Amino acid sequence: MGVPQVVIVGRPNVGKSSVFNWIAGRRLAIVDDVAGVTRDRMTDLIEYEGRRFELIDTGGIGINDVDDLNDEIEHQISVALHQADVILFLLDARSGLVALDEEVARRLRGIDRPVLYVANKADAASLDTQADEFYRLGAQQVLPVSAEQKRNKYELLDAILAALPPTDGPDDDRPPEMKLTIVGRRNVGKSTFINTLVEDQRMIVSEVPGTTRDSVDVRFELDGKTFLAIDTPGVRRRKSIRQDIEFYGLHRAQRSVRRADVVLMFFDAGQQISQVDKQLCQYIQEHFKPCVFVVNKWDLMAEHMPTERWADYLRDTFPSMWHVPIAFVTGMTGRNVKKLVNHAQMLFKQSLQRIGTGELNRLIGRALEHHPPPIFRQRRPKIFYVTQTQVQPPTIVIKCSNPKAFSPSYRRFLLGFLRDQLDYGEVPIRLLFDKRSRNDASTNSPQE
Image (tube, rainbow, N blue to C red; front, side):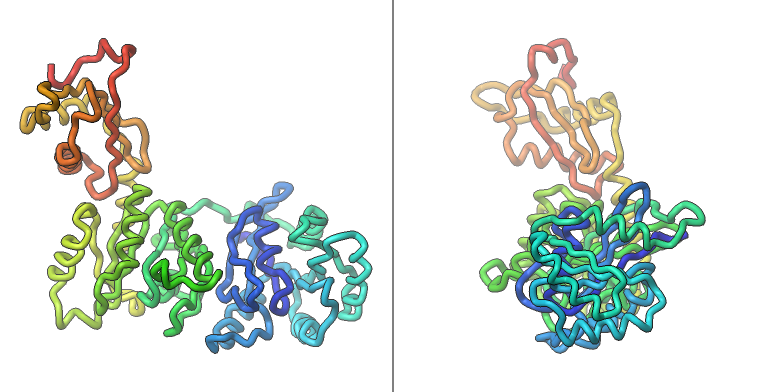
């Protein structure tokens, strides 16, 4: 059977995202005093007492969205309720019962699913009695909790477990083959691309800049394999970030880059490369993440510009990322999307490659014969041996006489030489120079 889904619903500002983060044990959803921060469905896989379930956060029912996305948010809530196995109806113990709570309760009565009434913001036991008025909604039990004060978490988890449907076999909770993070500035088509991947309106798509606010994990299948796509908020220039929501969105995007196996860096075919694009690429490069430059909305430009011009534009703008492959896609129609995912799989496999020490030393020996290191302080520095120490990213350590003697240009030469010869030429390679210790003294040098 599939993993059961537990959906959190309620009116705006009852603390749905706070409870979601509290149960998940990490800050996944943006929490802010501004109503309506959550728009898309946020998900996380929870394991408790040997059972697994997918926890889903939703937007506030009855929200008046500032960007007029009410219908889109409502669609996401309706889909979540339709797929739910258990519903957590979240209420606010401090503010008490309001008319919108009664409206949510009427809506849930038409859904044949277990509903758990949860009164959040009961920060102390003295506030528990304030939750009693929620019995007027027809609840047989109301569980007072506090995400802020971490009250009654395990009582809530026990109630969820008791409400889950019985298992009739192992849960389909296979880990994804690969995590793909999609980043880019605003309105480059990231959410449309995700919807095309999953063949569903999983993400809200709008012309309104900044529609996506959280980083959202979306599982999808391709050729019988399960993948995880991570949609991220569109990034703005730092000096343009004026709201807490945008600040958190930037950090969510950066964290999603760190989580990625492969990053898809999106560009709009009809727009020039911006400072934001450069900042994102720098962040990807600093974290040694395999990357594909994705030129989206290519259908709008294909008749006016050959792909070679855009490729040259990218190479000229990002000379230190010349190894990064380039894909031209149309996310809305699905053009070249499957090829892109297949290429991302290939990059992921490259990042896991290991090369034997013997082969590496023979390669470095050939590089030294072709181009010895320049004289440094009247001596030519020596390389004694080379070894790969880890993967993701492939990390190569060069034991040498003096790391400072190898100039940046010579290091780039060695890196380029290795990239041309190794099987992982399209992914970042971390090249480290380390002074040989006495324990390494017996090791033969590629120069000897």
